[in-house]
Amino acid sequence: MDFSEPESWARLRCEAEEFVAAHVTREVIEHERRTGDGVDRALTRKLGKRGWIAAGWPAAEGGAALDPFETAALWDALRKGGVPTIGPGTTMLPANAIRVTGSAELKARILPGVAAGETLICLGYTEPAGGSDVFACATRSQRDGDEWIVNGQKIFTTFAHLADYCFLLTRSQPGSAGPRGLTMLLVPLDSPGIEIQAVHTVGHERTNIVFYNDVRVADANRVGDAHEGFAVMRAALEAEQNVAPASRTGLVAKDALEFARTHRGADGVELINDALVRERLARMTMEAEVADLLGLRAAFLDAEGNKPGPSRRCSGRRVTCGHRQRRSTLRAPRACSTGPIRRARWTAAWTRITAAPLLRRFTADPVRCCAASSWRIGSDFRAAVPAVNSHET
Ligand SMILES: Cc1cc2nc3c(=O)[nH]c(=O)nc-3n(C[C@H](O)[C@H](O)[C@H](O)COP(=O)(O)OP(=O)(O)OC[C@H]3O[C@@H](n4cnc5c(N)ncnc54)[C@H](O)[C@@H]3O)c2cc1C
Image (cartoon, rainbow, N blue to C red; front, side, top):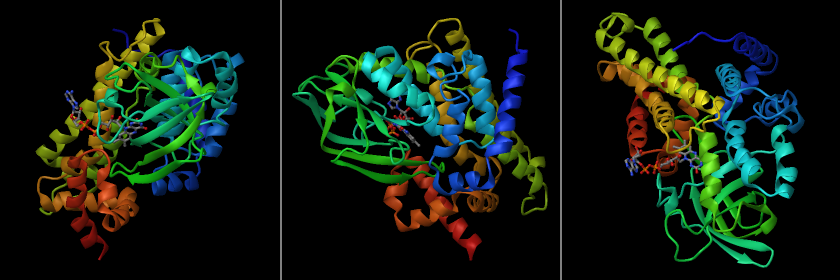
């Protein structure tokens, strides 16, 4: 296997670093740290001007005609430079599905805005009762003339509070089950009947619960055929297998390593010289490496015209990157601790940097904060509270 990088990757990284130096100000980073929004509208437009949002699309469609590897190298550098990429990155998943399965009118109306960084689309798959099982979808859509009437509830609809549309999975055939009888709708998020409530995660993201009460959606905003939403979703999942490979796990592991290098334990020994700390840091770093390699494999398959797809071998990437990424934020404190005191010190330091606003919200509204992600995150969050309180007092 040849791991050497072509020249174009270095050039794109360099361009991305120049972009970061010019546009990712302290205010941008502070705002993202404070809100966990995952998107900065002004910055997203600037990315769009360069054709970097839909980087793999032809220039005539507002892209930069990059191959999957180049796209990955570019987005890796942007993410590392602090560009909030969740919003624009997520938008490209439904955008690619619309490009493949949408009507000509829908494509012409939506996709230029996406490529320009003007239009943001969030994902409305997950429901409170379904979790990972998206085909347990119970949000209903009922045809009424030229419109659909939508009723139901989604959870974890990340950046719904800032997006223009939600790519919404609905059950359109009453009595159907599993992947049958589903219809995908592109719902304008300023429609009457939509209520968005914040959910703050310990991983520092803001996500949302979204309620749909008798929301009317034009049939022109249907993506793909009625009751064939699974085919549309499949196109979006294929795109999801090939998002930029760099996982945030690597960034968290790097921060944890820096912490271990610059802090001592209660016994006066540098954390980095503790065998257990080293082993845990090594484990985190290896997991990040595996996630990145799986990402490169997905990009390779895509470049070969062989869509990785949700059911192929690269589906492990989604599991590896997604789960590791969320877990790494929690693992970092553990990696740097061999006992409760060290763990509390890391937690306090980490919290001071990123999570203090979240913890304040947590103490005010523990249920909402803990709703995100998993109970493991919730319980770690609870464990962190006394450490932070003692740090602050
Ligand atoms: C921060 C964050 C942002 C998200 N953003 C979005 C978004 O924008 N849009 C959206 O639609 N969704 C989003 N999600 C949802 C996410 O993609 C998952 O679908 C969802 O978190 C899974 O549900 P759950 O957390 O309730 O876990 P559960 O479904 O309860 O799963 C718990 C554990 O069991 C495992 N598990 C579940 N089923 C099986 C099985 N059949 N076999 C083996 N193991 C299994 C899971 O892998 C997991 O480890 C987000 C989630 C988080 C935490």
